[in-house]
Length: 249
Length: 231
Image (cartoon, rainbow over all chains, first blue to last red):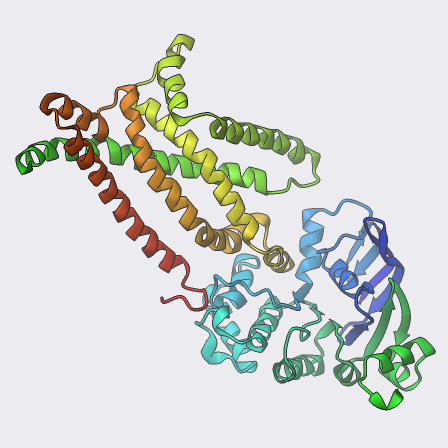
């Protein structure tokens, strides 16, 4: 389990995370929802220290860390070893082949044997339907294919948690579906995931837990059933605001 | 005319092989090493650790001073100071060594800015992706950022190299018998300045044309991963 307590993050004079406390349970899929600029991505990025909050604590299995104190290289390594991030624009390494994108980190960082790592990577790629793309470069793949590779890259590090920062926001609906199916599989396999998304249908079907963030505050922390079937007024507004419905005019 | 060309060519080509080309290649290699170091010192943000931070800031000040100094003064003046000036301070250098030092330092200062801009052109997101995979800064540079930066830096670095080949003609002013100096000496004997200097110009153009081919080859090699590249 990951537990954040009293996390505060400010950019210049804007407070992005306001004294926020939340749990992310093991083996579950936690979905973070909220309007743009609410602090969702900042929250997610605090978990693997791509963003450094000014204060608060994170408890992550055997690691406890106080954001306000200097973080040692070892601490940051240990936390990042437990997490892998999937980005909105996938951020594959363009100079490496698809296979190398998946294998370079396990081989370089975890010192895993090359042959075995490549075999495993090919299996991951086969699972996402990209076996025959292993030796191509990312630029030769579509956005949806690249995002599937980046999911393989994240999973190949054997993280405890996969963090996904709006993984399908840059994809058209057809490509989005390809990626969502893979994430659904991962979720069903019991991979711990924390997912920021704007896709409500997907959130509803895949989430074990929903967190609704607005203006750096957590306005909701509970089950999908509560969130979608018994929403508060603000959540109702949010849900209806993002659904196209011209009968309301 | 052909007779003059044929009799003077061996001498000029020998000067080219003995001085012009070695000067250019050796100075470019040292210049490139200096440039990469200088660019990295200016590019990498020092960690919060004070033991690393302050020495790094000192290094950065030195790097800034170095680039400022060599970009703000003429190459010819730099060569004169190194070869004719330094002996007064008790440092006497052989002409060839003085030339290599001058050309290397000058090339390094300019090329460092080329390399720094190439490093900056690699998106920040590449660093984030590498950090989240637990790459160290060094691993990120070696495996991810530098390979991408090299591709960006190749055309302007080729400019520097080609410029350097031609600038080696300035070494004639510090007593080196490079190709241009030889053409001047031959001219003094045969009174054919138009022919001899045109011949020198032609030989420089030959070297630079070969370098242009090399540039195209390297560009194709380093652009393999880019969409629409031929290779």
